[in-house]
Length: 500
Image (cartoon, rainbow, N blue to C red):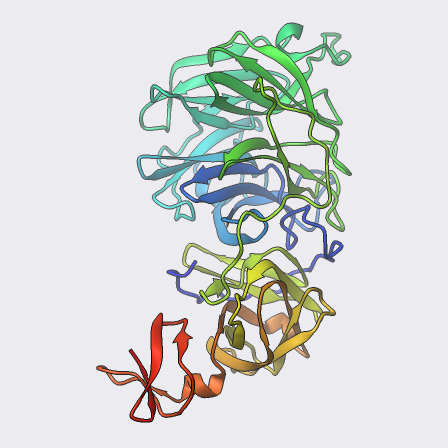
């Protein structure tokens, strides 16, 4: 978030241990992130998720806020803050917990984030909506009440049809839908219940409920979209433990036709919740499992797999992988990059909100991996990072792995103030590399890391540039090179380097 300020207080939190370095799934490693809801807007894929806390209370889901991430390459994910908490819906929702599944959508420049929470003094669920003019917020509750409420009314999925009519789908062990008004904050025409007992529509029964009634294959987590003139409804199915299935229809009101299972039961989790999107010509299925270290049924984490629809539009069965997906593009290290843009990590946590985000360290062996970084043919010779610390800390820059070649070390001592610090690299770095920042020191739990950038010149050349208002001059002799900060050529004029 380059345009944002960076003055959020660091908080010491319990760290999560790491997955194997080559693993891509789960895709977020600094906390638990269930119920992923991807949304494509322009060239960015936004990922709206819930948040299972590190400590489970009373042996049940412990969820206090909702989080936002984004990517442009599908392998490096940028933390965009914690835009919504239970406090956002304080006028009607139970506080400090029960921040359940959600989905967000943009319309006419406004972002509408539909969430599930428990109605205070009622005990049953409600689906509320928060609104902002940016995906990162700030969000507010414009109606101060749920859009819909009642038993089993959870897991909202929102969709805008070709004619502009928006719909809200929701339900657990039952399925409802309703039209949304143009304000996107109220329903119109009443709620309609879908017949999930129709085996042709949702598959065969899965046993019986406690009252003796048949248990339908549809469980929860509806995900509605349209592709190729046909409506798709993906959902968690089969009771508990859940798998993922889908049905299709020629109209959004049905009738629906059951198409089968598309994912099995998630590893180390009795639930599976997600949905698919098309992004930059690729198709991705998001879901959660419990495979992050310390994870389980109440500590779930977002994963993603790529798939190719069949020629007739049907969805193939999608196997789970640890490898995950391949990058869509490289990352440019000569542009300023946010420290919270991460592929994998350990011993760190991202913090902040729409005012600014950064990384804090909470373990003496923290690291951040950034994947598929392209240093080009000329390569990099120096490095700058915006950091803060109360004691001497070190960022060691390695290639390929946590134990790979050290190409530079940044010694940090800033008295707790955000400061731009620079170091030379031991050797020029070229080509496409996986980059590792290893954070170490005596008091790394008080260490902050905001952003970073590489440069083609050494610090000596960069520091000797004079920058008056009307010209920039290097008082050195040397070859013609390119300044990546200003995109000007540097030439020798009267024995001096001048940036043209």
